[in-house]
Image (cartoon, rainbow, N blue to C red; front, side, top):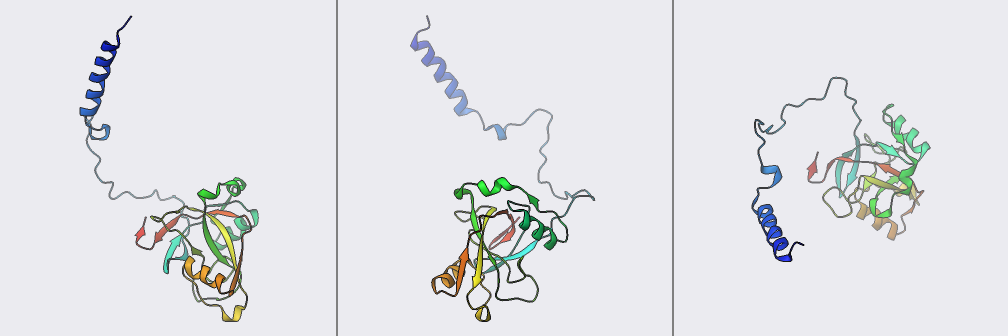
Amino acid sequence: MISMRKISGVAFVFLTALMTAPPAGAQEMKGMKSMGRMEGMASPPNAPVVPAVTGYSEGKTILFIHTETSDRKIAKLLTDMMGGSPVLLVPSLAKAPKAMLARVYVFTNGAKPRGAMGPLGYQPDVFENPPGSPGYSPLRKIVMVTWKNAASARILKSAGKVEEAVKTGEIKTSEPGIVVNMPMLTWPGGKR
């Protein structure tokens, strides 16, 4: 039978060795050179390109992409909007836990700006929680925004402004239960 004293000694030696060893990432492998930075990497000539879309977050213009959605009609609408770049149908996205979702506001009426527009032909989408903020997620639950008086609509560029307009009764919102994967490419203070 092995005594506790011997086990304790072995455990002590093992723990000491672990604590004094350099981190695994810092150890050099014999004959291997560091790759350094991967500058100059280029995509293969036949790599697909996903079109970027303009939106707003925290009062700033951002760029994002649509990759998948839980709704068949939205998948077709976004695919057509992107000139045929497919937005894939993934019905199970609608079952994502609330903690995994952030909101995106999509306008059903109102201002029609020159240039970039949202998927329904009105102002670009407005995102809450950009990368680096608590609650960021590329998975977005759609919140439909409707101006009560479309003639008095203005461009809203932040979730805070959308929420203020809800409180003042200028707009109403509804949640159809649709989820879209919308990773941001640029955001206030950052980019990929």
